[in-house]
Length: 233
Image (tube, rainbow, N blue to C red; front, top):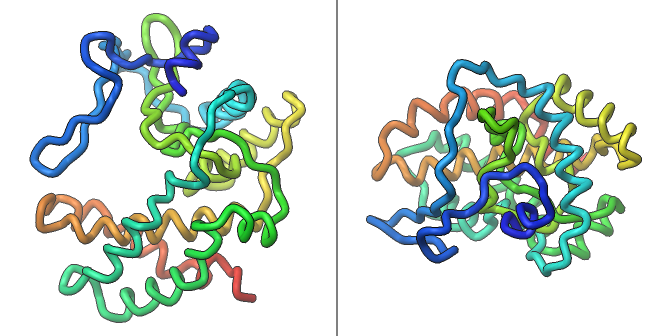
């Protein structure tokens, strides 16, 4: 998809021309390679402003002609496997809640028809990986980056966990572009799934010990959230 965006003249960091356009496995981890681009490190990220730019990206992505899997960016099999394997890395009460939440959310992640029956919103190609965070300031302007998780899904997925200020910024720009605004129930759904993805990453702590501390704030926030995004009520 990103090569298609570049060919259409959209501001993206394209794949590297030096290697094949495919992931490379190294020590159990997957890497992708992109064209070297200078980043303006002194520029502070403005996520609220970037959220508005995501609406522009969504409008561009609507023209993508290729086939994409439904919500593959959620990595449902990873969540399932991790929740089965997690042991000492997570509090038993947290693990019990996570497994019960996933029983509610997984069918909506796995099935396009189940999702649309529940929410009734339109789907389109999405970035898949927190695009307000992945807009890079460069000497050639702001460029969209990190398209490894592109999928077919609701636009809300690309705003998961960014909060009300970013959501309002996206909605304002979406209205200006003639796109629909974010749906509150879908936002709660994607936020709930995103939190379970974070919890599932604790399964990688034996390989990446730094994740234990890095994920603590997200898990504490999850404990305060409604069960399964309130979808059972």
